[in-house]
Image 1 (cartoon, rainbow, N blue to C red):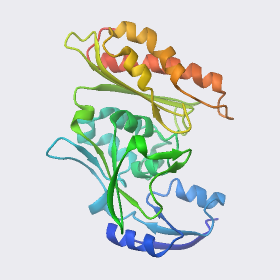
Image 2 (cartoon, rainbow, N blue to C red):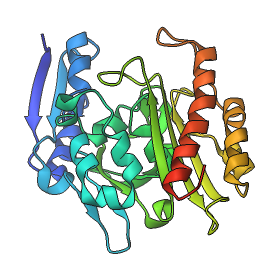
Image 3 (tube, rainbow, N blue to C red):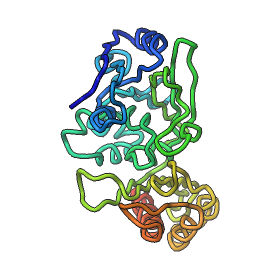
Length: 293
């Protein structure tokens, strides 16, 4: 059973912010694929919900700004992120990642904003948004602020978004994606309907010769309590020939990550995954950029 004390349907973002400010127990719900699971499980029993589900004019869709920034509305379904022509032309690796959560039913009800706001390190969009250096715009009755995704996560399942703030836009600036090719690798016990045991996103920008790494970003989910980038590994292989970088990237990433034991996988197995997934993701990202490897 769903123990819901109240459900308010907001008519605008401003209205949602007002409702959240007036009720200190109220929380936001959009697609509900995460919140309703917690309600049913008792973690959010007696919930006071403010729904932004129908605010399509303000919070839905993917657009490309005049300056090349990719702008994603938080209530955009995973499926619509994946199939968006803007996403496919600019940040296709994010589209790949958004095609992996759950199954087809979840991907036409779950939202990318919910995936960010639940702040799970296993969230399928998390490592890719980290690699792209996404900017997160939130608003409340106090005003608007932008939180870089690197500063979003406060711990497992926790973010620095205040309870009464609404995520209104996910932005990826042009210089964060231009010239990069990438690959997202999700490991689980099966191909669908699975929470990630490990997620890895590698973005690479090759030199003119297509055999040297000019720039690289390597990000993980479930390699630490929060999503993270292996910046030390990135620095170590930047400027190297692709083949040499592939040889080194796995051990470098293992040295920088901090996975834990859980019922899904041991720490040692996750470290093995980090090494192998780093290598494979770099190979695939480089191939997409024209490298012969």
